[in-house]
Image 1 (spheres, rainbow, N blue to C red):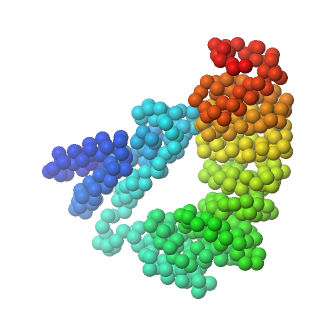
Image 2: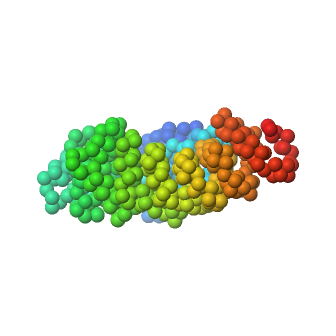
Image 3: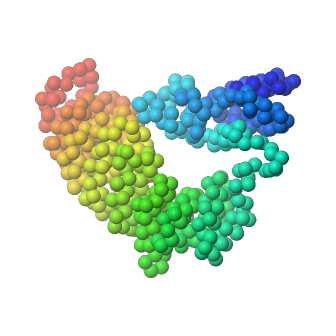
Length: 474
């Protein structure tokens, strides 16, 4: 509200300005989107209608301070990616994610217990911050340029149609045309819808995937543009057929191109390639095609080490989860040493909630095979890390962790794993879990685990004597 209150000094009707500012602040607690919309109206009506001399003075003399609701309540910095919790309070994504990853389950501003840890992107506020930021760094209305720099740099729909035509007919200017299209697609959902409805566009991009000789930079643009538009495609079967079921050996060429983008492309192209693979993994056939492509799964495993980019790690994990359901895919993961890679991720201290959930999901998946359980049991650090995640990350993570422990300790009856669970204070966690409001299937698996430990480790249970011992059901 700093900006409205500051600008009120320049208006006769300062009471109205203050009223709008206070209304926006009040509404932000209950509806951040509505508050942002009201402030947008205020912003355009008052600030953009100021004489140029006044706006210049305000900007040049540093009278404009950062509006308070542009700042993250945690970091106090301008929000780069504002997201709203279920309480209605908006935070910067990185700050609130770090808060939740530290084990907190309350809203930092209101201290209300969160019913869900999911958050919704506040696109309206993000757009408003962008407008405000642009107004500080660029003249709002230049005498030499009637339109903004953004409007000049962003091509029109007619120009995009012309660029698509050039992609089809001119081989000498394809990189520039595709870069222009990618910039257009990144700007808004409306632009992506426009490209998706352009009948020949997606098949044209897929056609470029079939040619791995076009250069890595051109391939990067292709996969980035493809990822931007296929996210809104409802016909995933049609997309799979287009990419993986082209004539002749084209499906192999498509996977070759995506593998090249993974191996040699920049970070954005790597993420886009993985997202394209995830989008087409819709049935057993497509999952096996991807999993059994030589070099593809090893590259994905190479990209999920703790030192890699968090967004890249999460997208690679999503892809691995998507293709891992067939038994042959599970065996491939086990043979390639996925358990050791996943164990390192579980032991890392800086992993987000969503990444941890996906890692535990993959560990649970491979634990459904005899070979996978054997790999887990031989890695005591992995078992201890799984125990450590129980009741510490989220209910989803806890369920995946308990299912894995049930597989190796109860189903597989591995004594090494049972000993590792005991050393990691697993019995205490299982007892506490049974007291919590966990799902029935998790409670049953916990009970099965207690039976195993009671039969095989009576000494451990007899030495476990606390105020909660009386709740033991056996």
